[in-house]
Image 1 (cartoon, rainbow, N blue to C red):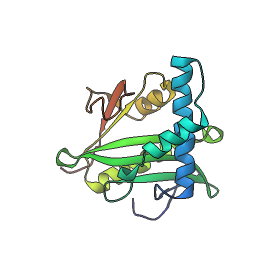
Image 2: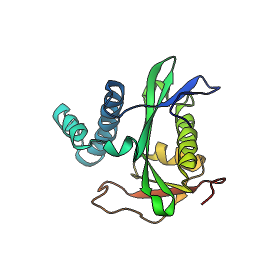
Image 3: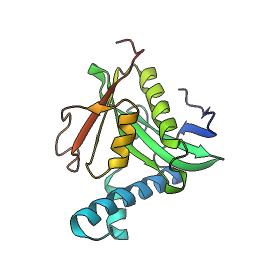
Length: 181
């Protein structure tokens, strides 16, 4: 996929967005709030405080989702940003890219944004020359795990360290057919 927008038949437009843009920061804040709330509700029977969310947003600079190390793709419907997905190089030598920060706003769920984002990320990974995409996630994010499985991702052994992501409990990967390595 080029740096321009790719219109999709589902009325989704997927385009790269700088991670420090106001729209990207807003989407990342919503993502962090949702995944943190789910974790805290499961483990501490409470939601995340605004200060905790701001701390997570500040802690996660997401610089690895800007070129040349990665890209943040934003899904828009009618020009309104409704979701995002980060893709970054994990191991260039082995042709492995990594998905990060997949998020679709609740109002857009079930409308095709997530499959459109995944397809766009695969296109970008192929253009980079990646032969494989990996991701990590949590057990409680069952909807995300089901989405990835529907799109060809399968369980793989742990590929990163606890320091890389202390919350990771599930690792998945997908070979990218049509990529010459």
